[in-house]
Amino acid sequence: MSRLGRTRVTVQVTTAAAARAHARSVVREQWEPAIGTACEEDVIDLLLVVSELVTNAIRHGDGLAGFDVTPTSDGVWISVQDNSDVVPDTAYGSGALPVAHHGHGYGWPLIIRLAREITIEKRRGGGKTIGLLVPLRPADRHRRTAEQPA
Image (cartoon, rainbow, N blue to C red; front, side, top):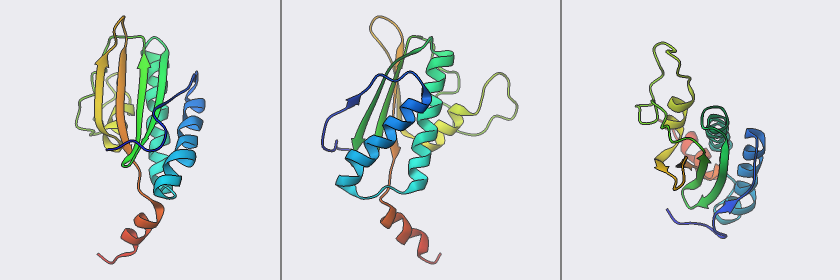
């Protein structure tokens, strides 16, 4: 996984909507010029993962402490920092949907299914950083694969 163009892009975001908008702009302005137009399904997956991570940081992580987006040759690396040392119970699960709610939502199973290389690191001074890769494919390559007979 190699970085594309500029290095990591850090912005001050306070909402999931702002984080989604920033992630989409990084895809348009940095990933697509280097690789090609991104498959829209993959961009939707990216936006779902960003929404879940940022919402979790705000609701369960004592607030959002940082949000970074790094375009790579394989997709987009997302890094979300929060102020809580608590690691979500389901963070290292299989990605299977929960049989019953039991206080856990569907966010982490969704993240595990859509992302790769998930890391959770404690931050010096408190809190944690969750990093992961959301794969992106060029739309033309995805289209050719989908059109081939099975």
